[in-house]
Length: 196
Image 1 (cartoon, one colour):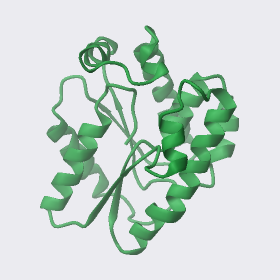
Image 2: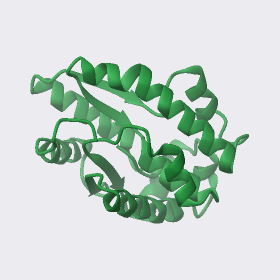
Image 3: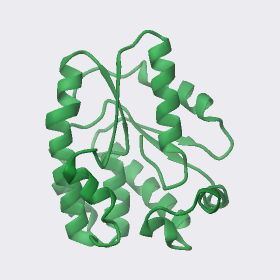
């Protein structure tokens, strides 16, 4: 599940995990950057690392995350819900000046999701949410950040669709996290259940 800062990916991912578990599924919830030392370096280094250095750092964390956490969970038969994944790199690192083809080349060997969910919202809704909770990254501190992120996530969705990833875009402007989780669960029920 990916989307601009303030759109609610963490809240919706948690609602999805709760919904799927209530339906009897075994769900492994995770996030990126991961909780590993490498992931934490990326998470708390957005003011230090930019452009290609951040793109490489996030890609390295993703490959380790896939290898040590995501694949083992899938091998145990769990459904994996990940808060932020490849779509975020294709949006934020491109927004940061790294060519999209370069970002894709850095990430293309990571396991692609059965369903990539991209949340969007009206720019004013995101700006209001960010103002209420406070910005956490340099992307969120940019006054044009919400507008730019929404545009880049839209491009990310189109790119992933073009390379064969199943993408679901949802507008989180007015829908509750529970309703969004239901929409994701309904769409995911039609996924292949395997690795791309």
